[in-house]
Amino acid sequence: MRICNSLDELATLRQDLHLAFGVFDGVHTGHQTVIRLAVQAAANLGGISGLVTFDPHPIRVIAPARAPRKLLATIDHKANIVRSLGLDLFVPLHFDLKMAAMPAAEFLDSLCRAPVKTIAVGEDWRFGHNRAGDVPFLRSQSAKLGFTLQAASPVMFGDDRISSTRIRQAIHDGNLREAARMLGRPYSISGPVLAGRKLGRTIGFPTANLSTDSLQLPPDGVWAVRVNLQDKLLDGVANLGIRPTVDGQSRTLEVHLLDFSQDLYGETIDVRFVKHLRPERKFESLDALKNQITRDTEDARNILRQNHP
Image (cartoon, rainbow, N blue to C red):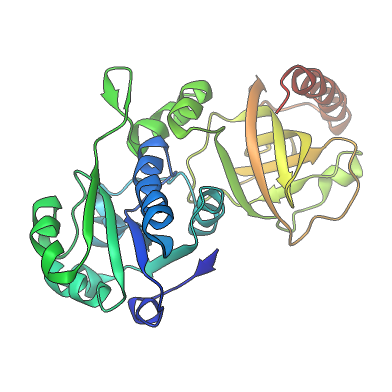
């Protein structure tokens, strides 16, 4: 999948483009419906399919006080998710105050300097200054600029539409089964393995540490997890929390991979939460912590054996 970082770069492409537009936080099943419209158009008409998104999340620039505190995916994780959906092109546009002030017509004219043949959006998608660009606006411009507009209806789960906000709440509440049904896959977080204090090594349980600052997380505690490392799924047990036994100061995700001994520093891993094992708690000694981790490891092993990927 090719990455383009600007509309100017997009304009240099000479193949017909069929593009899905949106923020796509989490790339849930509603988003996937929009993406499929672009992929199918490319298959039917020829050319390449792509996804155009924005980083950071536009609401964090336009109205920070109303922005979600946590997101479902970093921009790199988003790219990895959509890679499996058949897209040829990923276009993460930098969103700033200059872009926020750009009139919808100006943005659309700049976009259509490239050979855009299809634009796919959700029916409530809006863009441009004061969010003036909407589906009726796109439809009115389509003949003049030479593209076909496809607008997808919301995808429902139960009585309500699927949304990133709804999924974030489900994850916050620990309802990962419901979140997975709305996402169309198990919820996971992705990022590079960071250097930690290496305390796990001293008690026989080395861990891979991930930054979780901007991401929506489930409840703290110990989790059975599966980790995707270079397209290979590995079983693991993870602690999410502040590590009170060792005087931790910030919320951290530490993952111990079962039956694995390689150095992971610098690798990017994808951690899928499978089952919550217990709340985080403080132990009276490192020996007590070690004994509990041994039990947690066996619990995780048994659960993951029963929950095949």
